[in-house]
Length: 384
Ligand code: SF4
Ligand code: FES
Image (tube, rainbow, N blue to C red):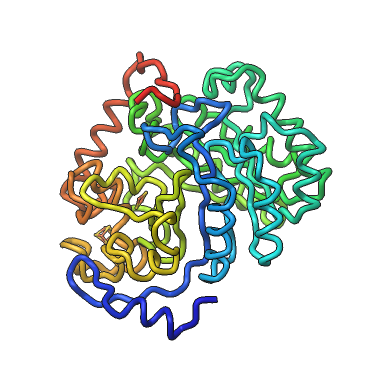
């Protein structure tokens, strides 16, 4: 573990956007995007448009070194994600290494390319948890959203194998205009599958989702109905199924506390080793990020300019600067602020106090009220 003295030493010259000295605590979690390759082509994917090819990815030894450094840094949970992380032939070694460090490992998967034996093997090697994405509980809609025939049947079978392997299961249901009316059915799917938890999360418009925003934006009424359904289910299923809910930003009163605050307790490593404070940070074109091939994680976490830029609260402009919620939502999402206003420091327009909020809400209303939304632009390596 990086000791307090070493952390303080690394943070000595750490300054945020406003020039304030900032000192981070150790991170709790890391998202390891092992690959951008994926058998599915979901149009709501938050991966960047310029997807990396297999040849760009970190090699086995690089990832093992990253996991060693993450454990030393104090990371407690590592989410193995992608793309589809199970396309990495060295996944077994990664799970084994994390188990040896006592780090909690969570596999985030589409669940279409794994066998019962493989998930059993991963459980035996020390995998702690599985998160399975489900795009629709209607066969044809699932095929359409994923651009993969038979996705739903494979996912049902996979969920059964996860339970048989004795692993806890979370269902990830990312909702948008094409499946938001299935919210109740998603919750039933999770119950039938024996999951302990479901995340019903509305699409965040980064990466491919931003390109497909007009095809994905749900209507205000749909969102209200969903909130009622989720609220009722949360009350009814207390103690049976945990339901985490991320409502649509575009109709919100206040923004989500994105990532729990910039570089506050989690970070992301991309398939080629870029270290980011959040999964969409590469969309901030006025910033540069560092790479695990060139600098140890501890230095990047405590001392890099990119991680320190939005730490603390002194960098915030008005209205966040004098707002009583600034330590609750941290001014919202930097990536959304940049995408909507061109300024990463701006108040997230999802906030009703932002001068850009009205434009964001009107945009959502206009997009969702179209009777002829555009066709999906499917996620595909090499398209951009
Ligand atoms: Fe949050 Fe800023 Fe809005 Fe206040 S003004 S609620 S801190 S985003
Ligand atoms: Fe980057 Fe919210 S996704 S700060």
